[in-house]
Length: 640
Image 1 (cartoon, rainbow, N blue to C red):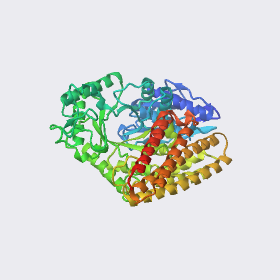
Image 2 (image 1 turned 135 degrees about the vertical axis):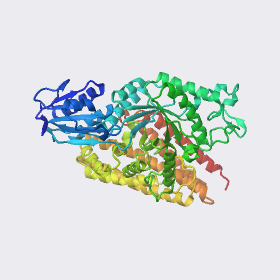
Image 3 (image 1 turned 60 degrees about the horizontal axis):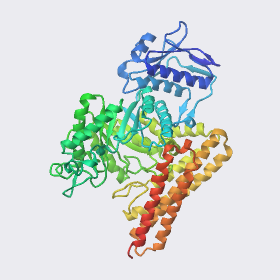
Image 4 (image 1 turned 90 degrees about the vertical axis):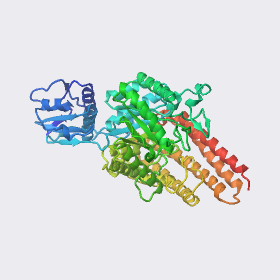
């Protein structure tokens, strides 16, 4: 056996090559071995005679140091890694720089370290007297997805808090072998604190993706009066709002100028996201030059022209075309994508009570088909945007659906997708969706990941005294989440749980009943957390108290959703409905959201993060209160 540490005595040296990533990886191994054993492994530039080494570095360098050809580069794909025992030494290597770091974290996982979610609360480091490794160990492990990303969609304010959250995220992503960080931000706006974020990303050799909505604003609206032809035409009239005219070379030149400025001032971008005003029911042009093109073709035409230009100066940068809302159906694309453009499909309005391939779910069958269509057009350059950790989509509620996530990723892989991300909101997301995030990270590396074993480990190590109770809690929470998120029978336009327009009355009535049943399950979840709190102590007790807080928000928002949907259902589908009853339902929805808005102020920034400030209070509470109030007034003005 290779004795790494025995009662604080170190039996090996760490030897790394001259790459910055290798030294960082060596320091990470040294740090966590010391945390686990109180023994500090020396880091050296060369092997010491008669003393085993852990070689950390590039593949060819490691093979030379170990005097062995035991690893063939062809055995590795993407940023896969090797942990191999050779002549009493260990090799930790990869073809890709970040894969070297992944090898180190995999070895640390091998000895029992876990990083369940970002930040210190999610870290589990065992206390060990001894670490020994089998000298015949041979792990050559490759990921199932080429790109495995997390997209930060927070409002990034206050900036200091956002920056601290991002550092936690980036650190956790590398430990979880996610290899890309997407900073979602309007490309025409500056972002304070970005240099620090990029430094943390590049220190770990992760991919850096940047951009998002708002690309259309590079066509200055002040030009509308003098140059209306730059802007879209709708019903025979040029419009200042929405997108621009995709047939106007001058408009595209303005977009290109803006994009070139982004690239000149924001170096290091690997994938640039240029999203336009992507809405339902059209925001593109109907002029005589554009109207013959489908909306997806209009966007493809613009994107191709942009990348034909910027790829000359920036040949390594990739871009995307968003398949979302009006552009969802790739079958409408007749123009071949530029080689640097990926198809970025976002199935946001799908049903999360079922996996994407579930044949019993009509809604998901549609999105599964659209994903297959995208693969036909873009081949292996299809990138799926998922929403497993989205506080907006789930209206602040803790939703737990690990089985759906695990099966989704396996099915996406089968369709030919090899790039995946989940959109989230930093600390709020790993407070509300901690295990969703853990399953996503593990399943994006290995689509055969057993989430049930993962949940057992999660509960045993985070809730050691109350693990049995917490397993039952998560079982019930998964059932409650499925009831709330069961969108399968809706046939018209959907937004999210915050606003389901009256439709499909028979199914909507069933959905409302499911939400009512979910409320009862959530009450049982509250009781379980109370039981767990009584028998816990220390860090475990604090974690349960955190869970009680997010569950309270979930309960109140579920109540608000139930009352809002009941009121709208009565108004739309019940003849001679009692207006006072509709008003009562709406008032209860408003009251619940006002309570949530008050409550979030008492929650610490360590839990709610930057997204628990204006995004939560203004967009997800105040705006929703105003929306329900407008529904209430509409119902009051309805003629009998």
